[in-house]
Length: 357
Ligand SMILES: Nc1ncnc2c1ncn2[C@@H]1O[C@H](COP(=O)(O)OP(=O)(O)OP(=O)(O)O)[C@@H](O)[C@H]1O
Ligand code: SF4
Ligand SMILES: [Mg+2]
Image (tube, rainbow, N blue to C red; front, side, top):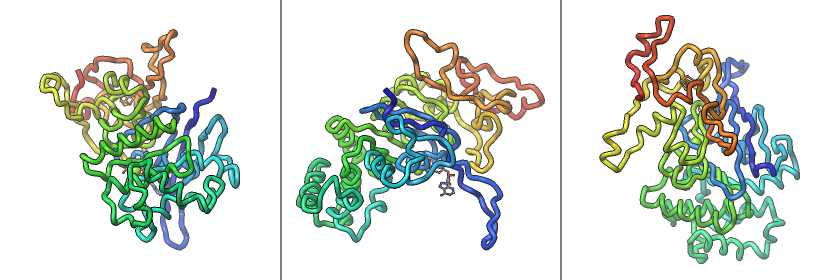
């Protein structure tokens, strides 16, 4: 059986132009530059990465708000990027989005009932007009809000309640997949757990599959079955939550995780902190070879010449268990990082990079 939802080499480049009247393309913003993953029914795939690495752009392509520059999105084996009209509309119903900021994503002039019921205007077959009020009240109840609030406006709710309204709206068409783009990032920490718990409950109740996007590594670990780590438009490592969090193989993941606070003082003592130097390069000027090489303490000559593909490192391949712990690093199998002595006078450049022992 094919996965429920699959991305294959997804690319989104935005043209970079100069001039106001006679626009001339002078380059491209490589927002997403070859992203692949698969999502099974009932599964949660977490996507983590720093600001600007392309997470929202992936989300928008999955729900057909943006058309990919190239690549495929397969829903139950069918490429939906080629669909239009009725066929596209039918697929869109099954893949819904929950947005990041419940303060700006809900129209302040609409009642909660109209906001949650709006998708029925496009898909009246799901709820005929006479049935909508009842359906919306049911949805309010499902997300833990009082059905009598149906005529209230967004400003009458707290942040957490507003995100519940956003989730109810996402559920209105009874989708199979929810793409949640940082659904709790704008909320207070105390409220985040409540919304995450609600999402987990809804997943069990309705058999939903989630693509869950976040900055916060601990939240992603909590909710995800599998995790994809993004850097500058590409996924650099994927695996189960245990593989990624306990045995990261990509230097970027290792660095990200080394910065996560550890409550246990002994574990904290033993941990090697990896400080990344330099900034993330601009998506208009992506480095050759491995795009992480300008910040990678393991980088050597090959990294500038060859793009590392996302794959299970040879040493970890096991014929009995088809592992899916993939890493886009030429040297992912190296458990120990030997201080680099690059050829060609790069020594000074790398001399002050932190070493991971
Ligand atoms: N419509 C657009 N036109 C040009 N560039 C864009 C457009 N949308 C996004 N970008 C650029 O693409 C890159 C990826 O943006 P995206 O919003 O997907 O990142 P993100 O990972 O969601 O970031 P954040 O964590 O801040 O939400 C950024 O450099 C952004 O400036
Ligand atoms: S391929 Fe090279 S630069 Fe890229 S992550 Fe691996 S060691 Fe670092
Ligand atoms: Mg975003």
